[in-house]
Image (spheres, rainbow, N blue to C red):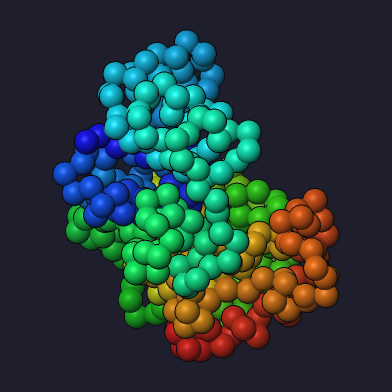
Length: 354
């Protein structure tokens, strides 16, 4: 039996969807499982034993109709028996259609349901602490009565060489285990997922004041200017603890460095999901428009905790879903001051790092 799992979103989604592969492996132990993902997300699933092959979806397939068509023809030649499409957009609709698989499963959408032999309706309420993101993905494989018993956690697999190389890199920059080491996810993937810079600076000040930890910044290369602005907004004592120029040159390198951290703190996103996948404690600040229960994976109010504007100022939402407030996200962020975040953060730091 040959199975194709499709997930063409960002790092967090690709990592979360590995649980589909792991579930399929359990359900069909003799099957060959291929996992189709975007090129830039491959590092987070490298060495993962839950599937047999990675199918790379290259940027050129989006830029060239001819290249995409040739890719579809290759998918057709693979003769899959089952396709599970966790992406559910036009690209994956066409990939599913061209696969010719007799069984095709995806999430319900009224305008794409005709591409699939079975569609699964997402549940809006979680029944475990795994989050709806995990539970709904497992619904693509298991019946409802099995979801609770089949919960699995996404994992990233580093080898010992990667871990040792990261340790040597940190030590060469004067960072040792004598002090706590905290990774700060200083910026989200976009403005609508980024705590205002001045608030983030105060959050970092609190981390240093409470723990005296060494601090690393996580941000994308194109965000360096904004990251430096946050550094400049922190107080001088805090700046002495920040190793601004200590960063990885690859995603695998970042994960390996993260494995030596005592915690990751900051904006919700892929870095938080990666930290959880290698058992690094997390404190997450959610964007005002993100639905917290969808992505607070395996939160236990202990090693993994979070805060959302809705937790501290529910009156701003009334009966409106956070997602419906997306166009007001920047305005809502101004209400999400560091004074609202720090009390809960301080308790987390004292409990886990001091």
